[in-house]
Length: 515
Image (cartoon, rainbow, N blue to C red):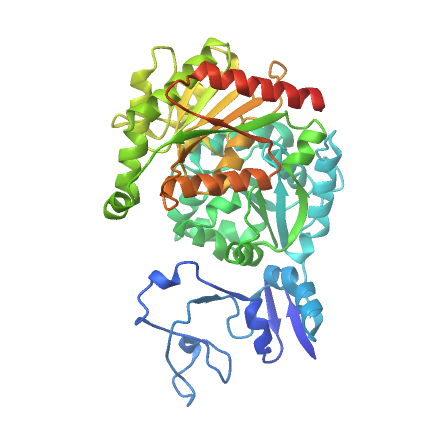
């Protein structure tokens, strides 16, 4: 069976009614649809003309309503995101008897003949070459390890293009960092759309929050219509936010998504990323970066801390209150974190301890009797400026302070090289987080031998339904999939920070000897 498809840079148009078999490839079951009110009425596609009900004029006899089937559909009438079509085309033709006859009008952004930025690393040059080849097909996904120079790759691509381009970051603390690096590489002024400011240039760095804020501004609409290429950094994080919709509505000639931890095994994540950008066009995994010496060596240590929680208590309190009681305000657990920080600091190491709640930062800060800095959006009711957070990072890199306590603002995107020890006390449920955090610590530094990444695993052998134990299993699985060498240390009443460090340093020495 042959299906005609007309493809533009952003949209693919099926020239006839598409077979029902394609529904499985272009829709997914909403992960939380069971929690949505099932008696709520939603508009679905008409089974006769395949158009959405809201697109009917009201004159058609076959207009109808139906209860939501719990699926997110990317096919709207005869329209489909072009990126999703390119990403699934080969799979569909392989699995079914359907063959696509593709025609279209693809426009490629104009390229420069000189003034390009080059790299001494082959994988970066190869990555940009792949990006240039896929420009006319609308872009794609770049799955490069944290610390492999994704901003530099963006600069290399922008230096080869004539038109307007935008680099979208997730947080304000990353905005100035990305702007400075792009300007130093490109040798031209880079625009700024962030912190409520709107000053675009040929190449502009923006946050999705500020883009959402200016979305109704006529100047913003005029600027976005001129964009040729858009690169979304940390796309796995940004897609989950409601104010990302303004980014999805922009229709440049090409969109690239940069990430180190996109969960392509999950269909809900995979299809959303394909729909926005397109298929995976280049991949540079963490293991390869370490093997080629682009990233430093490191190991992960699971500190197995017994944290028993009564199943009835966690069901009655819910996650937020249970987390507050058994993680944030747990004196024994906080002593564990503080003692590991003190032991690492005493050995001359540069330490970052990561938690989630502001109260947790306060609890740990009060326990430490040594110089340290807090990096967060607010602390003790006072707002911490982005400049102050960047200053804390710079002081850390220069050795003026060797301990940083941070929350979520430091787990992604921040370019920090000097860290020797990361202590993760967040007990998080997100599988991406440990890879991002580990990646923060394996950037190369001349005085660093390797990274020790400690993940405090709250375990309870008597209760398999312990939420924190389940979350720890997810994090462990994610680290193993990334190829990170993992060890386990059972924390007991006789344990202390020095004992854990002795074991961890021995494991790291063995890894370095075997490389």
